[in-house]
Length: 109
Image 1 (cartoon, rainbow, N blue to C red):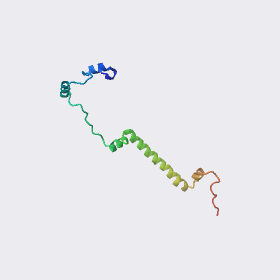
Image 2 (cartoon, helix red, strand yellow):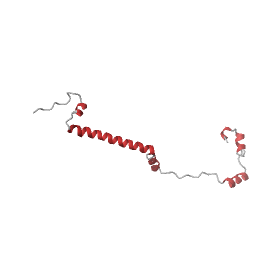
Image 3 (cartoon, rainbow, N blue to C red):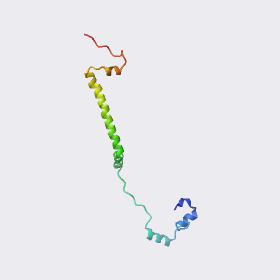
Image 4 (tube, rainbow, N blue to C red):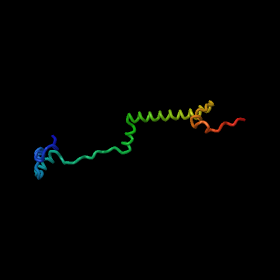
């Protein structure tokens, strides 16, 4: 039934009522047949649990793993540049950091 598409008279007829409301006898009959007209309150999840659930579904975990791998890869590159290249005597990081002429020339004994 699409009650929103009906005019007032058709809507009242479909609900078996009148514009003035139900009679006392009809209200008592409907109360006995259908019970009281109330909504039960549903227990909600705690906010912290709902927030944690947003970070632990399948695609979020895939993103967490990707972020961790990217962080480890970036850390490995930084460690390589800072420790491995200077130890081998490579001056590439120094050349990449500033244009020629900015670094003082090494002192020759």
